[in-house]
Length: 182
Image (cartoon, rainbow, N blue to C red; front, side):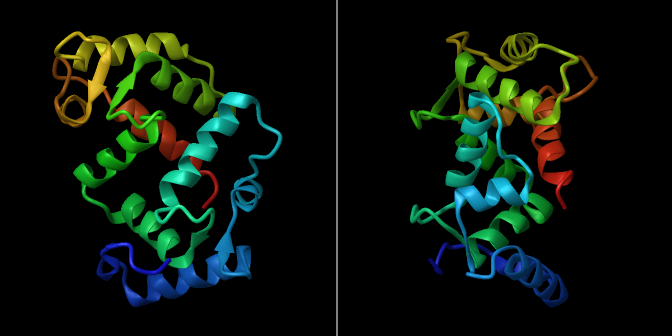
């Protein structure tokens, strides 16, 4: 706990006070377990895909791997989500989506993520397979069926045919989950 290399200077003192009070109200012990996080977000009793996704979010924020999110990890996550640079956010999303930790995101990993997001948000407008096919069609430049960090970041920044950013859908979907519980 403690030293995570985060830049906490990005958060104003009054923001810090607000987030500390919120953190301590939701977790008086000063530590958030995976079970508590699911309760705080109202995400208990989910199917396997949704549970796996929330677990992956937790373990991504648990920077020291001790099984808890402490206040420093919590505030680093809040800072990243609210005030982080786009490259920082994209690296975090990449780490979240790379479920096996091999440095690449394959179609199955991304479909699992979108299935979980749909299970959590109850939004079934487009199938996960359609979303993943579109993403890979637009940004898997080497056609290997896997996205590298570089492809992922570049794909998030490049506009498709002058319209919407391809990965904005990913960021929007993940944001829907976190924003509905603020």
